[in-house]
Image (tube, rainbow, N blue to C red; front, side, top):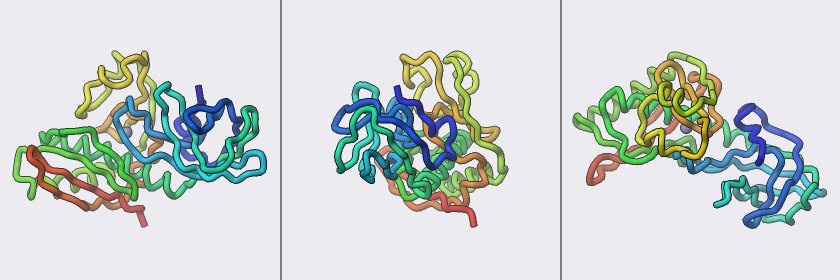
Length: 243
Ligand SMILES: [Zn+2]
């Protein structure tokens, strides 16, 4: 099992690790700073990128992913480093920071949507470029509901509250978690404990992503897409870096 430094210390940009195996066309590490969304948590996000120095090669990461056997695989187009080789990990930090902002914004949008009695129709996702997509149904006219939703999430970000993570046994997690589209029982059902991210006072969601440390880092939110669907509306929101 790979030690996930991106959860223990989301600010970390470099690390020394060792290649611990080969799998699914790539290699495994004893520990990593590169996040790939665990599909069991249903908060999709493009994987982290960066490079790995091993055996004299600078290996640019093409992809980091969880394979079918639950292993976190690092894939590059360079030579596969030998098992046991030392590896220097370097994160593409601006990309990570942009995604961490968007991901925290996504948690606030879910909270704001619930307050407005909107319904999330599918799992929300970070799609890259600092942008979040979600599909929702609103009680009122979306032309009024959408700006209100974004404004409410922005208001939550303006509280400048801290973002923290905790691990909780499932029964405790059920008491702490705020509503989202996926039932808690459906998230990593084989795990006795779940990781929860608390984004200020109003949002506690099961989440496996490295997030910002404080809501002020989210910056300005902007509606980028509003597309009518048969049963609701598909919307995009971008989180810009604060000035
Ligand atoms: Zn999340």
